[in-house]
Structure formats: structure tokens, C-alpha cells
Image (cartoon, rainbow, N blue to C red):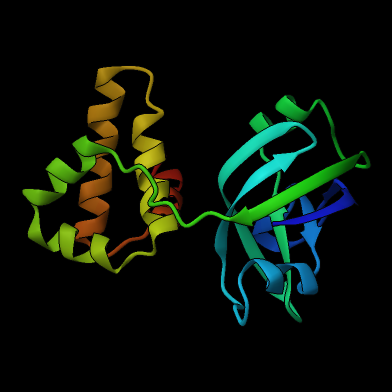
Length: 168
């Protein structure tokens, strides 16, 4: 477990990260969490008293990492860019919860399942979370079909979404 205080930051112009709210995790602390690691990994813990789990630390070079602070986290914290936050983190090596409906559909499409298995757990979870966040059965069915179709064609989540946006 590592504990530190930091300031919530926001990217102004940073490619696909533009507009992200985040905190920095210095290299020496990231090394304590996962020694000799330079790739993204998941953590759990607390931001002030707001509990988090399954949140990715993303490498930013020279051993430093960032953790995106999404809207739900900002709301739970009641804080925005510029605010100080107390951080307590530890490695989260629990398996992500994956949509059972998505796994059932993938089982019927071997090519899609083969591609799915090549994805990192985090990228598998992007598809799962998107499907499970549907508010209606109709939307969920549409998302399931889109996801399986995209994976059958070898598209990861980001490419699928960009393709969908371009086709609107």
C-alpha cells in the first residue's frame, strides 16, 4: 500500500487524453505497487474516503503513471481540477467482472472469441462495461451484436467506436 497527497489535474491538449481529469502517481510509488513494471495495471484503495477498485494506472514515461478520475469518481469525491486529494493505493489483481451475455454470444462466434482472448483484461472490460451500461434490453442486444461483429473483424473497442461514429 502506498499513501500520498496530490493535486487533481486536467489535460488541456494531449491527443486522445484531452479533457481527462487525473492524478499523477510518481515512479517511485508505482514501483512499490508493482516492481519492474512499465505497463498499465489496476489498483484499488481510496481517494480521500471514496473507495475505488479496478482503476487503471496508465504509464506516462520515465516510470511515472497517471490515474484518470472519471465523472463518478469526481462526484464521489466532490472535487475537481486543482483540489488536493489524499491517495491510498494497492495492487488490484482481482479478475474483472465480464458480461455473461457477452461471453455467451462470443461462444457462438469462434472468430470473435479468438480475438477476444487476445485482448488485455482491461480491453475486454471496455466491451463488457459498455454492454452492461445499456439502459434497455433493446440497446443491450444492439450493443452485443455490434461488439461481437467488431471482434469477429478484429476490431478493439476504440476502433469499433470510431467506426460507429464515422458511420453516423
